[in-house]
Image (cartoon, rainbow, N blue to C red; front, top):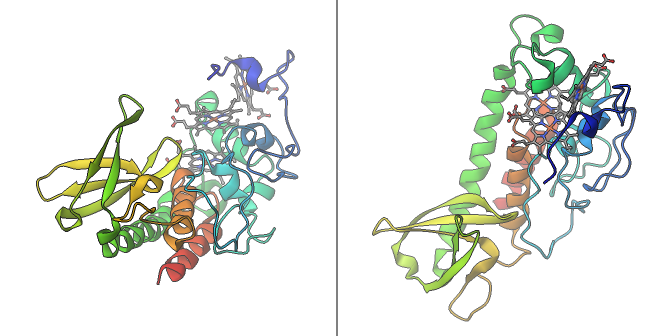
Length: 265
Ligand code: HEC
Ligand code: HEC
Ligand code: HEC
């Protein structure tokens, strides 16, 4: 990756390269009327194309490229929620410069791009901190994570063959046969841009792999791409990868999570 220098964002006279609206982003939408936040959105989007919200089989196990902030603040690219243009956050449209308002202009150290968790109080009053929104949203997001993990555990008998991912080597290093009865728990993890899991065994061994690399006794994928857990998993990584725990777009994140939980029932 090229290092980010002044000229990544600035022209020679220090005006920003992008303002007002974005071109079509790699995430498959344009952000219109977002002031100087357009500059940030060029990079901070999911980069996996547009999601068709009601597609029954996405035919891939992809996780959204993290830094999904633009998708979340513009209320885009969720499964199970007919997002259209109905979930654009007021934080994108009515703060003047979206990302730049909170992360640059109202920050004590503008070029660190860190939002102060107290930034919310500037508009919503002294009682209103980021934590107000974040605590409830964290509960929701973690419920979704737990729901997906328990769905996998219920179907663990389908896990017989596992390719073993090694993060240091950034490659698969082995394929092993496992006895599903010895699986004690699974944890969601992102592996090289794909949805993955870490599987824990009774002997305390752990294996990390992409979900698409799990095979059943007949050699078929243990979880097909059309399984709701794959769409729910995309949604989980979308709202988790945003990193603001709901602050950017509380209503959208809540609805995405609730609809995902319903889809897993
Ligand atoms: C990630 C994008 C980004 C990078 C990289 C960046 N800036 Fe900025 N810079 C901004 C934003 C956003 C503003 C705020 C613009 C505003 O509030 O109108 C800004 C404001 C400024 C301003 C004030 C300009 C004005 O008209 O008020 C200066 C000067 C500046 N930056 C210099 C630099 C220098 C020097 C570097 C490299 C060391 C740099 N910037 C790197 C995004 C960036
Ligand atoms: C050229 C692409 C690019 C642009 C433009 C850009 N960013 Fe980033 N930003 C990145 C990358 C890459 C990282 C991750 C850096 C890392 O992990 O060290 C990042 C990290 C961040 C972080 C997390 C910092 C941390 O310490 O965890 C914030 C917040 C952020 N950017 C906000 C902004 C804002 C606000 C703007 C617009 C003013 C902006 N970015 C513009 C690429 C970009
Ligand atoms: C309404 C104000 C607001 C707007 C607009 C906004 N953010 Fe944030 N953002 C926050 C707050 C508050 C947090 C949480 C900070 C914390 O918990 O410390 C946050 C968190 C983040 C994080 C994760 C925390 C970190 O520093 O690594 C990133 C990255 C980020 N924002 C990028 C963006 C980008 C990119 C945009 C525009 C697409 C944007 N934000 C728009 C207020 C805002």
